[in-house]
Structure formats: C-alpha cells, structure tokens
Image 1: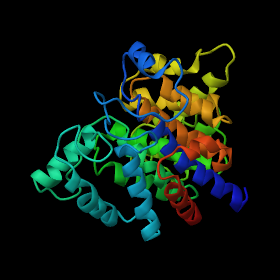
Image 2: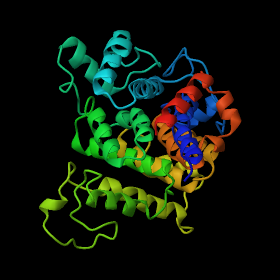
Image 3: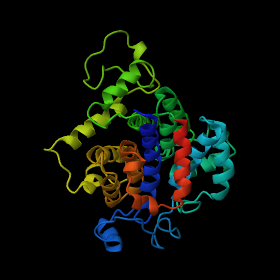
Image 4: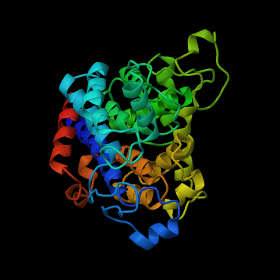
Length: 356
C-alpha cells in the first residue's frame, strides 16, 4: 500500500464517521418506522434537520451530534499531542464539554447527552471523583464512536491501538464485554485502514495478532477455525477473556457475501439485529452493511440511516468501516458538500492521517 492510499483510507474512515453522524441527525431514534417515513419520506437520502419535538431539536441539517463533537475532540487531542495523551483528552472533557452539561439527557452540545457521558459527568463533576473512577455500566457504543480517531491514528500499530482504545473506553464504560467489543471494532477498523478487506478472513488476521501479543484477547481456541489449541493455556491469556468479539466480523462478512442469505432491502438489518442502542445490536448491523456495500459508501450509510432506531450509531460505525475501504476519494462529493463545517472536518482528517 502506498502512502497516498493509506492516507486516503485514513481520511475516509474519519470523514465517513462524521458523515454517518450528521446524516442521522434528523431521523435519529425513531422506533416507529411509519412515523419516520411520514416525516422524512420513504427513503432518506440527504442531510435533514430534526423536528422541534424530537431529539437534537434546534440543530441544522448537516450538523454534528454530541457523538460527532466527541469524535472531533478525540482527533484534535491526537493531532495536538502527536500521540494518545489521556491527560490531555481528559482535560478537554473537563474544560470543553463538562461545563456545557447539566446532567440531563437533552442538555449539552449536539442536542443529546448519552447515558455513559451523563454518568461520567455526575461522578466527575458532582461527586468530584478522579479520572479512572468515573466509568459506568452503559452497554452502548459511545467509546467506539470517539475511538474511531484512535483506530485511524494507530492503524499501523495494533498493540498501541488496542491499549489506547481500551484505556479511553474505560474512562466512561467499565463493563469488560463492552470494552472488549469496542477494542475489537477499533482493531477491525485499523486493519481496514491499512488495506485489508472486510471478508471472511479478517478474524484470522486479528487472531494472529492475538497470538503474537499485539491484541489483548484470550486465544483458547486456535483461530477462526475454532480448532483445539496446543501448548499451555497461560501463554494465551490476554486482557479480555474471550476472542469472540474478534470472530464476529468474519461470520457477518460471510453472511453478507452468501447469495442464499439476503436481507432485502438492506435497511432491514435493523430489524434482524435489533434497533436499540446496545452494542450487541449495533455491531452486527454495521459489520453487515460495511461488508455488503464495501465499495459503495452512499448505499451503506443510507441503509444504516433508513433502518431507524439507533441509526446514528449504526450510520457512524458503518461510515467509518466503509470509508476506510473506499477512502475519502470514494465518498460522493455531495455528502461532503452538505456536511457541517466540512472544511474543518477535512483539515482535521488530513492532519490526523498525516500522523498514521
């Protein structure tokens, strides 16, 4: 892979996530699909503004939600420091985000503050706890959403990627399974940025990284084939007990490529895997759309949005995965034109990609 190709993929992953976030701004969290269709039409294909009685009211089409704000904050910290400096990231939360929150769901920048950030705010601001003791039990994807920047920055160094993603995730979410799935997604995104396809072989690549110590997952089984391991178990024990979060992408990619398994139209992936916010609903849907539309960014993110429910996380994660595969050059210009603060986002992506 040339430096130009690597840079293009890195920028594509970051900008793809920003686009997914902004595309879902208006129709976010409609669990009644009939209501969403009545308000936004049978097929949402562009940026839209939220209604005044719904989430993110007052924002304009193309704006970022708080997920986009946090992703930008993470990327800006990485660019400024040239590495993952957790003290700098936490300082930015203390000084730039938390003063704008009041502990309520509808307060703060971006029109909505997630459960994990609200819990962290209460522990940090109201209770005065130090960083490292502010995480909570939310089973959602917020750590992945900002971790996209970490995956891009450390795409060529899986060990540093996993360490940074785990440490950053645990600032706000402490459930081991949630952290493991968050690190797994970031690891998948990292190998996509470096040129690997999202196919049935991707889990084998990731498991190989576990065996040589680059990824901190337990490898009691031997690769995606699930064959019996040789040698002592102690040598295969990593930070996370199970490697299943690394095995999921291959199974989903196989299903997406199997002509006898079809989800039609593809937006109904939300009905197959679930519309709610929990990480175990979101990841299979994002992996499926990103594998099925691996060379078609627009189709991938629009199907993610049109599935309703927690379509913002679904579109953001899908946008990152497909953006990493097609590169910034493969993202339709019209989606860049409508993105809020597109010049600033593109500049941030360029500066972060230059560090990869």
